[in-house]
Image 1 (cartoon, rainbow over the protein chains, first blue to last red):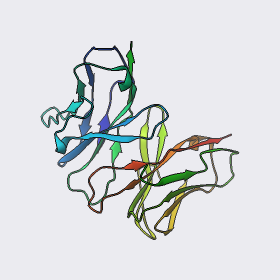
Image 2 (cartoon, each protein chain N blue to C red):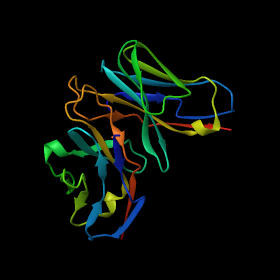
Image 3 (tube, rainbow over the protein chains, first blue to last red):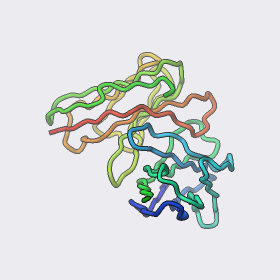
Image 4 (cartoon, chains in turn orange, red):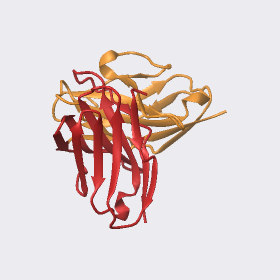
Length: 111
Length: 114
């Protein structure tokens, strides 16, 4: 079964501290993984995708197929990073953008 | 905002009444999706469409139907609303003709079923 697990409902850190939002997945084929973010009073939007291997707003995420993980990391948290973060998955090369989302982690960055 | 609008943005209704949510896009994007967002469940796909009159079920489609008679509109209908359908509903589109995993979301419609 396809599944995305985000074990933490809430992650609270202080400004300047490192951040790691955990995401584990279950998928029988070759997955594509994504991180979406929803800032307060804004629309849900794509943050990054593993295929791009890019860093967005200082965030990076590496797909670890051995551990079936796609953790989101940032070395120094900023207050503006406070948001709800969703990990999402789809089958590689899928014919649609049907995404399976995790339950989300609320990141709260304290001053 | 990728030209997506949802209506109504807020609705309170009573159990057993029909409800229709509308998603409108200003571009001719092929793929449209309806998700619901619930605490502890994240976003779950209800239905999606890959063209006019072409729709398919998602993971939580029971109690919901959809229609897409025009490219720009994707309607989600609750034939007889129940309290378990109290949720925030998000419409999303794919801008690319080749699926890339990037969805553009609407602002959401908050539905309360009393």
